[in-house]
Length: 121
Image (cartoon, rainbow, N blue to C red; front, top):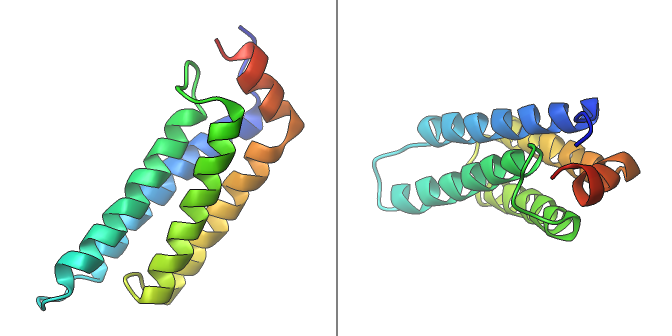
């Protein structure tokens, strides 16, 4: 097993940060109304996806490179959808979309692909 590339470590930390920001966005977006459960559920979905992607950038991660790419794109899509639906504040949504785009770029990097397919386990 070779050392983890610096980009991969950074992506793992950004994924965890994205999950925490999603939880903060859920708290900030809470309003005691009938749609509160739906908004909170969508924010939690985004948080779970960010935490899952963060776990994939660790040693012994559960996914192949193809699955990682699918999950990073899914994370970005859900983040955009939740922001457009108004569950997140606009500035938090923009920050989360930026984080998810960075995660996509790091996952698409050839060094990341090599590390996941050959050196991770």
